[in-house]
Image (cartoon, rainbow, N blue to C red; front, side, top):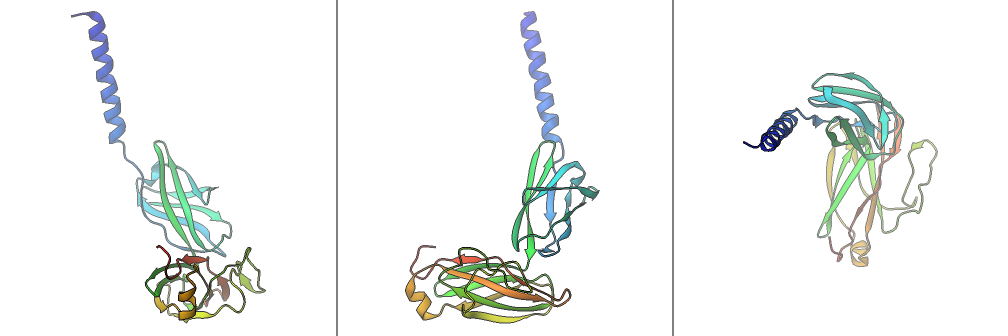
Length: 217
């Protein structure tokens, strides 16, 4: 056999073994990321598997020091106060990045089906909420005394729904869009004003937007 062929076959075999070994290496997996209060998030906890391979943790693009880590649980931080909503989480390891999402409470998600808007509110604890709506949002957040984050709707924006959080379980509420809003066909902007009883904190949620009636969804 040609010596060159032997060398090529040997190199091919080594490359195959190397690629196979690399493919068999464990990869970190995110199981869950418990929500944190936006106004005082503290340390971020990540549950999953193979987390001991993580080299860096980034939340909203901010690198956090890893405080404790096992194969199934990682604690990083502290994280400075953030805007309420949903923050991207990146776990950097030797072979790439694993992505997840951290809920920063209170937060709001809304969707429309026909003339009804369904909203999911996560307060992070017992308290109250008032969900308001408008067909226009403010160009920049307005700071109201004693309330965390910024108000993104006018002060006289109508209340679409109000209620109580009995515990940390998120609420899902469905409301009919008032006729005068539905006829306009403009996007609908929603924001909630929430209280958290345990911390005695008032806060606005992030802004949610749904298509107006008659618009493509």
